[in-house]
Length: 357
Image 1 (cartoon, helix red, strand yellow):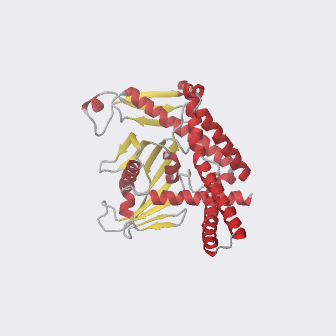
Image 2 (cartoon, one colour):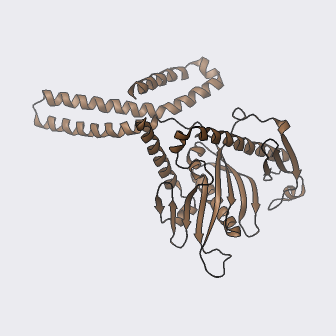
Image 3 (cartoon, helix red, strand yellow):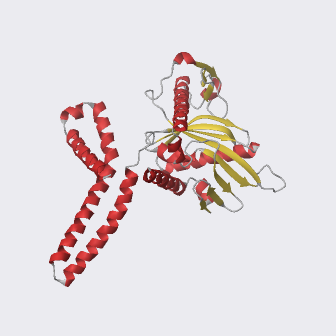
């Protein structure tokens, strides 16, 4: 591990020299690439330098204890040594986590699809609440959300909603939300006061660039139609909505949020790239079964990941045995604690796997 850390430190110092080189600065593509690498390595280098300083403190303290006879100085050296040893233990664990292979998609924007599952209108109402929850969480993270397509059920619920979340590290956080979300409550459509269980499915996909997925436009069919639902006159009276069909896979994507047909076409292509990219990722994960075992539910849409129980005001994440009685706050977008717990559990599983190897 420490040989690798020394190599990283050396590479970081090389990068810092390159950043000040006018030839590098003038090449914008190369400069962006170097700055991205510098940003990725900085937390590791910072922790490693702190580790080395703590190790030096221990050595200096031992020297004082060997050579110094003054009781006050010896006591001070002991305190500093104990603090440094505690810091070394913490930093070693931190460095192990920092050195874990990073998901290449973590920094990407995401495409999110939420669909009402079992439960009819109640499932659609729950899907709408999940959409609101993610929009509020994105706002708290200062990310931008863009609606792509929505299929309403007439009473405020969403049979399906597709939207994009644009922001640094969006996928690194939201990827843990993929799966089946279950709600237990008395639906507004229930006259007998019985508790029902309904579900909604969430799929979170990293936005794919053109270099990630190459689409042959001959494989795509575009149909235009008049947008429906809420919107201004221009939206509802012109053929601005777009339906994209990818012939080889049968994937169909509708986009009607923008007034411009061109903008809707562009959004539909982004969603198609994300879906095709997800298919490739899933194929890769299936082939790497050992790697998939270490994941905390980051892609299986059939996995029941969380239950929202209204009578008890409880939210339970079944993957990590997490329970909170802050249901109202969570549905208002305060999901950071759940996501952080998923990240910690995922890192712990990956560390355990590395230790086994």
